[in-house]
Amino acid sequence: MNGWDRVIMHCDMNAFFASVEQQCHPELRGRPIAVIGTGRTVVTTASYEARAFGVKTGMNTWQARQVCPQLIFVVGDNRKYTDTACKIVAIMKYYTPFVEVFSIDEAFLDVTASINLFGSAETIAYRLKAQIRHQLGLTCSIGIAPNKLLAKLASDMQKPDGLTVIAPERVAGVLERLPVKELCGIGKKVEKQLADLNIFTCGQLGRAPVDMLARRFGVNGEKLVMMGRGIDDAPVVPPEDEEEVKSVGHSMTLVQDITGREGLAKYILQLSEMVGRRARRYHVTGKTVHLTIRYGDFTTLGKQQTRTSPTNDSLEIYREAMVLLDTFDLAQPVRLVGVRIANLIHETEQLPLFEKERKKALLAAAMDEANDRFGEFSVTFASVLETEEKGSHVISPAWRPDGIRRVDVK
Amino acid sequence: MPRREPVRVAVIFEPGKRIKLVWFERNRRQHRVVETTYAWQDRVGDRLEQHFAVTDGESLFELVYSPLEGTWTLVAQQAVA
Image (cartoon, rainbow over all chains, first blue to last red; front, top):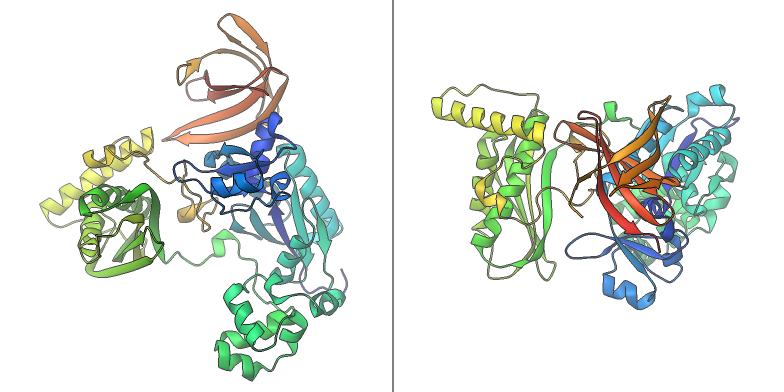
């Protein structure tokens, strides 16, 4: 491919969760469906048939039903989606080892070195699409461009089941009149700030004086100008080259708002156990414990405390989190709670010196062994047994098919 | 229906680790598999489970194969509208 320094592909699965459910349930094919979670229900993904009526991700079920009375709600099965995502990544790796999973339904592929093997980037894209459709019955939109920024933009241009190529010589033409919000990384806030500077299109952004944007956006000013010109040097980073994680955390939206320390304690213990268990599995310890609270009015606050020694012991994490909890105003009902350890130390395992500490470590190891064998929460703290929903029920945007970012969801 | 109901299943283990379901028997009635609509894996502790959504043309069934135990169970049934 002449004139291409790099050939980058972005693959975006179309209405991923909804398409999986339509494939699984033949009676749902061609019908407007919305995938929802359990408990408090918002639309996770809507099928294209539902989107045509205006159903959008994040709507609550009542709003969704208002815009589309014939909408069918399907409770999602996250294990189906994570397994499918792993299969898709395995298919991608047939074409290149440089696959960066961006989220559960999106990935970047650097196919620069694969062109000689397969003929062209378009051939790779068509074969990839065909394999995904044949093996899983799903469609995806693929964008091909000289970098990640433009590849992602290209994949958004034709949905569903599209293939769009932005060749280097077409970049300026494509970007000239394109609204800045179409670029990945420019959200509503930045769009508004750019509008205040009379910048509405990527063409205008690319021609804007760097000094002016640097005054407004600091170090990101120059990056924004480069984005406006379609320049992005970010590499496709396969999992083995990813930076080490900076924190390990879990959060949960409670089935109903809870007021008071007592009611929250068992959820914080459960989250601490999930954090501790994942940290122990991947041999990391954290010096800082962070607690997040979201009130019923969606105000979100976080507080943290740094310990003298790092830990991955669930009970120690819990105790720190409870100390933090006591500093919050608990008169207000709480909607979401999250526990995280940060300031991580990787690959460290110190044998406890004192008998009491050694017993604690042995107990945790015994519990981990039982849960590894029989499944999460087979052996757990008595007060956690009372909680209705144990484990992760939401696929985090940071989910990855392998390593510490892989969280087994229910 | 119990949460997990053991069932008799006829399958073909094809090359490439593919498992093709032919029929399964429940309450002495044989259901011929018209289509395997989806398949996925799950792990409970160290036990791998393979899930199959299959239809006999009237209903959709979810069958689970546990390779470790060599057992098949029916976990869900839903009429196809």
